[in-house]
Image (cartoon, rainbow, N blue to C red):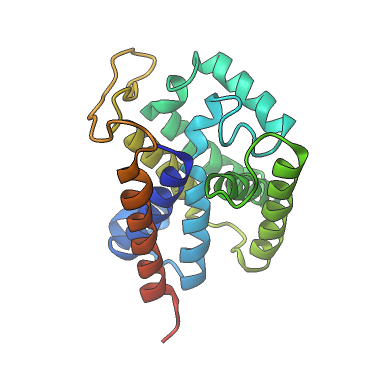
Length: 234
């Protein structure tokens, strides 16, 4: 799947989980909870970015170029550790590590860690949704940095001190990404470091017309509808 498809599917997943089945999904964190309207919108945005996270193993890809030389160097390092694209970061172990690391950071490193995660996820999301120019030029990633920075400053005003849903959003976004890639013919090694891949090739070719003109817009519309129904005051 392409970046915009991953991003919209991530936003839809969080909006659905937080509205349709809030208690079963969130209860494992700290008991029965309700997601406020504002947190619902913020969570959907963060999960849209997190749905790109497994592709941090792809230098020169959508998120590899999102923060310029910094993200590209990180992507090269992750690719080396993971064994290449669609390997280590495309298994269930990565989902667990991403969620756990976010939880630990929120709990023990505090506000600056939380804002750092939000900044990076926003940058990924803006890049995936083509809100910045393509390519690896300073104009492209510089605008991405500015947009993500502005979004982080705004979120800092409304974000709870310890957003309990942030680890969930990061883990869910990563899981949705992997699930989407499993729908292509290459599949994903869900039990990495074991090599067998799960592939259910519903999407015959990444970026085809069905994905671009039907699937992605449909997911976007459903997400907007859920956010409108549950987040807009009556």
